[in-house]
Image (cartoon, rainbow, N blue to C red):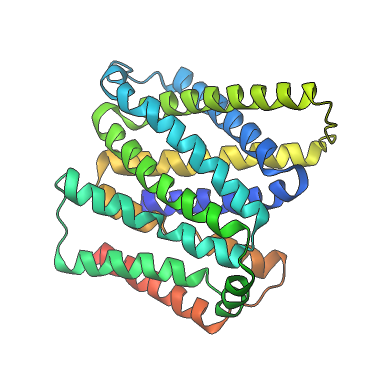
Length: 288
């Protein structure tokens, strides 16, 4: 559960900063810079730690296609965060955890006790409720927010991609699986960026200059997201994927706190209820 909470911290900060970066330099640039930074950091970690890489061939047939799923998930996530509103996008994204929890039970044979089931359900529901402002949600629904379709696609992709990464961590170790997956994903993004650049150049389209501070923020997006993913993968390796996933689903708390501290937003009653549900769910999981 501790690993899941660490993953939530990394992912929450990443989402908050990705929204800020995407609105300054665009979601495309943000996702490419972030994923290159994540792959570089993962490679440095492998060179320092020198883990056993012999298990990679057994999981590579799954991690290679999973890199395309992950790339699409990140691209749609950052696009959704760029378009917003976050009050509509975040609750949808928080529900991604349901998919790997169900897959880990069905495919990995993990079993949960009665109180653990209740804890998982309360934690995930509370995480979604915490990031929900009914007033903004109702307003966004009426206006059909541009970020919502991207969020739905990202949720489905992340659900499957997260499960595959959790399974690979159990089979080949979390760091080798993570490194190979990120290296493959970086390759996908760089090839896509090259194609986009060549098309825009042939069309004579002008490209806006990148502000160094925004570029630094995009790098930090990739670094903190990688830290969160490392925590998730390590937790999946040593514990139950379902429990780690449920704890990691608390990541929407970070954008909510960021809004309160940085944007002086005030959570509504339902968000306070969601925070209480998250805490209660985690207590149940810890006791169980």
